[in-house]
Amino acid sequence: MSKHICTRWAFDLGSWKPTLPQLSQAVASIQPEERVRLMKFHFIDDFLSSLIGRLLMRKYVSTCSGLPYHQVQFARDVRGKPYWVRDDFDGPPLSFNVSHQEGLVVLAGVTGEASDPDFGIGTDVMKIEYSGGKALSEFFRLMKRKFSAQEWSYIGRPQHDERQQVKAFMRHWCLKEAYVKELGVGITVDLEKISFSVDTSHQLTSEVSPLTGCSLRCHDQPMENWHFEEHLLQEEKYCAAIAFRNCLPQTRGRFQFLGVEQLLVKSPESEQDDVISYCQKALLKPYKRS
Image (spheres, rainbow, N blue to C red):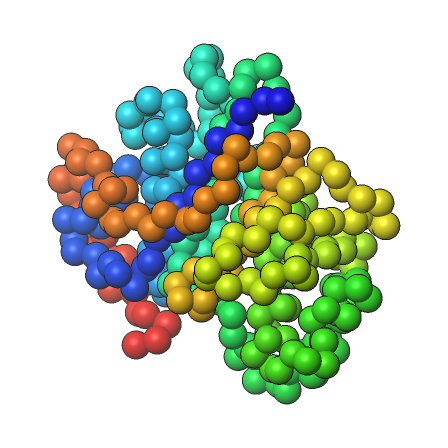
């Protein structure tokens, strides 16, 4: 069996209040077309979470390939999904995916062997809370077509209180998102036909995270070439899922939290006037929760 090595990184945005020099270093590391995308965000929170996601991708590819940051180039496929432009680089195949919500950004990546390049990974993270304004029962009614009958039977278990129902809902949503993100199709597919059976032999808690006993059926057919991990993060405030296609990591592992200093690389471009001016404008953006 091919060896697949999984990397799981997370970044807590609440731990970082960027200074102008730090932000300039970060922005100088990403490609000019990505800077255009980032500046379209109205809130600084969204700007920073997307920026960190790009830095995580750059660090991951740089670490796996040995290439310096400035030699790592990304492009986007027809669906807008970033991928590494390998050119003629002779190294191990890899797959990676990034997700963020509110104050948390995560990356999951997997490397394999050149003899077995057909594998992939998707990830998603959700905060375990409901703040939709409507009653939870009404929200579930509106979302009913997004889940199979089996999934609803678990989410709506009579023994589940409201908090547990929200947690069960977010777990299933994370799994669906991680799966479709690896497929690259987004949530335009019929999610009701994508049915997950979570591990019911254990409660998902920090002590047992990650759980790996989840299985998937699509259009009632078992998807035996897929494997899944479910994680809890940040004192169980967030759940995260990782979907592995045609690969099974050698070892289970938890997300490693990185600090901003582990993502920044000094670049001469960070001192350039256009980068500094760009960052000054970015720092004027409002926070969502000011």
